[in-house]
Image (cartoon, rainbow, N blue to C red; front, top):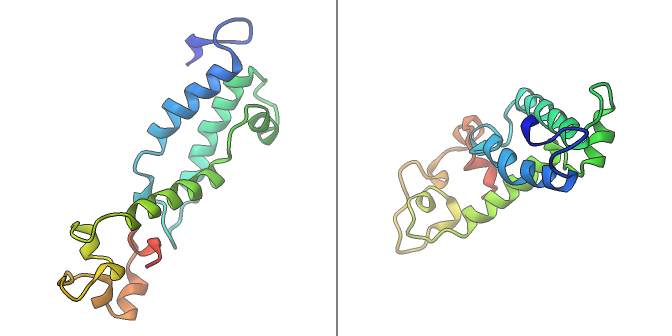
Length: 144
C-alpha cells in the first residue's frame, strides 16, 4: 500500500479509503462469524483489527504516527471496527433468516420446522436449556 501513495504523491485520499474499504477490510474480516458471536471473548481480535485500521488511517491521511487515532479515523471517514462488526453480524443474520426451508442449515434452526419437515437430531429445538447455555456457536447468536 505504501507504494501506491505517500504524503507528496500517489493516490488521492478518497481512492485510498475506497481501496481499504473494498479490498483490505473484506479480507481482514473474512469469516469473522467464526469468532464473533454472542458470549465469546473478542477483545484480542478487535484490538488487532483496530491496529490495522489505525495504520490504514495514518496511510490514508498521511498523518504522523503520534496523531490521535479517533481523529485520524474520523478524517479518513472509517467506521470503527467495534461498530462495523455488529453491522456485518446483523447482515449475516438476515442472510440466515432468508435461507430456504429445505437447506441443510435450516434443519438446525428452530424456526424452520414445519409439520412436514423432520428436525435434525442436533437441532436447537431438541437441545435442553443447559445444553443451549453451554453451546457457543454463530447459529445460537442468530437469535432464533
